[in-house]
Picture 1: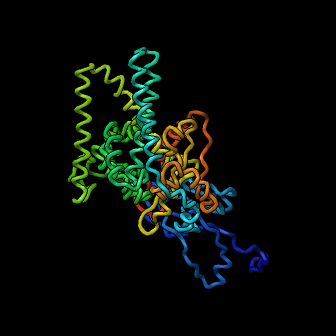
Picture 2 (picture 1 turned 45 degrees about the vertical axis):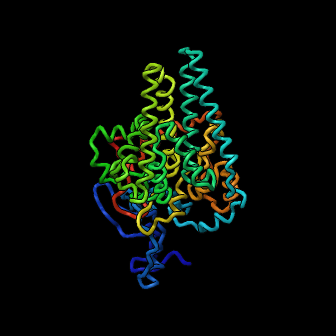
Picture 3 (picture 1 turned 135 degrees about the vertical axis):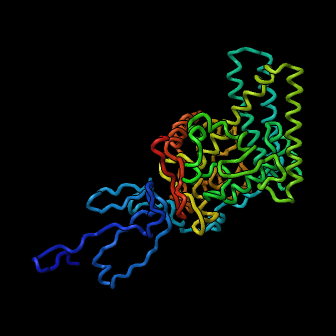
Length: 437
């Protein structure tokens, strides 16, 4: 096609190619407006078609940045969204959930209760063995090692109880409930209360408002937080100690408690289950109080209290990084743009080195989120089988050293920049508060 035309002033080039947002500006404010990654549109083509062009855009929220091509030869990212012409993580995938399911070998869906129970026996033996060894040695060189090891084992017990909650432990509902109550009550987690809210998390993963755990704060809620709360929410290690508070009062912007059968977390038919779990949790607290009188509070603190907080840190650390901290910005959804598949594809797999086996491969998180019925001991094989289908929507985890110290950097990086999302837009990305950063 010719690139020059005659005009009254002589020969001049055709109009330049400009960038334009794929959707209308929405919610313009001092902090920006809602735009999507720009498309290229040739004005000469536009004029030739009578000035009509279809708007194929999604409603995407990102800071205001409408740049011309000549001003930016290297297309800079809009709020971390991928470069022009590259992979767009917020675009609908070219495959369906059924395609992913079909790629998983049939035997990966089979639940073996004996195999599941073998992991329970293994972990319980290790827990009691560590406690006995630490109490026998009773040495201040040994205690820190014990706390790290036992806290990790408490986290492993939680993961097995988590499998009971999903029904991936076995097909026997009663067995799942009994084992789940024993494991979770022993580490002060209300089994049914947590199970129900965690189900909500899976059913709404990746949804800004409806997701249950570690969902982003909207800008309105973020701005409404007092300075101290805002600082604690994004300053390590405080967010890594948040789980007990979450059980009592949920996340900012949400109400209810995992211990209250009348909480809006639950429907009336679930209240008996919640009462049962709260009673089991109370019994465990009473046992710890009794042991404090029998053994002394310092011994209980050393044997149980400190490992409990290590467990809490593991839980918050792992669950946060399954939904945050990737080098590329990942989308969150609202409205019609959200779907179960698109929300699940925003989750991340993580490699924890030696810890992978200890905490039952919970790092293979993408397939777990899409198909929580798959037992943990089949997740690695299922993930490998689905990679050709997922393509770039699967983000290969960074390989870990024996211990996953590399993930500490990912945590700090995310806390510094992933602060809130826009109040408007159906596909939104995390934005940064410069003052908090």
